[in-house]
Image 1: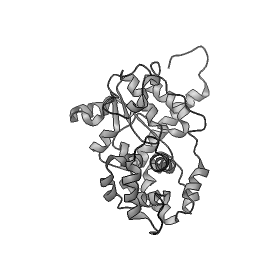
Image 2: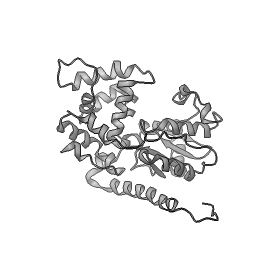
Image 3: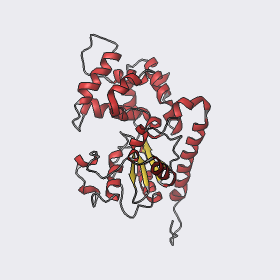
Image 4: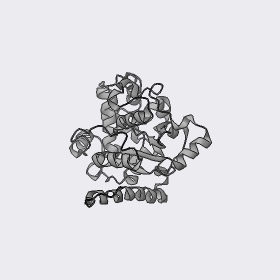
Length: 294
């Protein structure tokens, strides 16, 4: 940091500590034998496909859908030089990996992958795991703003067929069906049929391998107002690009919404869901949602 005439504000001094503590928590949870199956994963092609590369500024970004990733992708697209500013990127280009100039880590040779994993600045963003699942459900099965019909027409019927409790119920997919699918220890059978669409609801562990890859910073959606500028500073790009304005209130954890969604879902199903996502809760310091489980 450049020394300035005025004293650094307390907030700026406290900041790095928060980020160090997050990384230390991950290191400790990764070492916990009891959680091994929930915290460890192979750095497979599936993981390498999630990581976007900015060679010009030596940055790797692991995509965790439903956590404000579109904005970070825009930041990287601008840094890579495909577009001069965030405002000028057409919405349809952001997720079009042919046009957006964002290579995935999986497109490099093994030696090149290792080199980048060792030396680049690496980050990803998390949010409360259950809130993310609600967001994924709403985005893909309820509103579907990007018009992706396969979620409702192919994935939803597959989930309903296998997991709907009441066979006479003819409504479209309900949050309960989704929860039962995600909490099923044998969910992989359906996952294989759904292909990469599962990125919207699999665990952060499965997406980004935080125990295998040593990330430089973990951002939290709930504190994005502080975390976004900090990440840009740490990555040494704050003079080149800024994170798009965050609408007020959008990142705050909403317990009422979580309670409303889980209302009427059996405790057994919620406990099974928690059992699957427990690694995410523990690794990233999210409180166990006891108000849903007991």
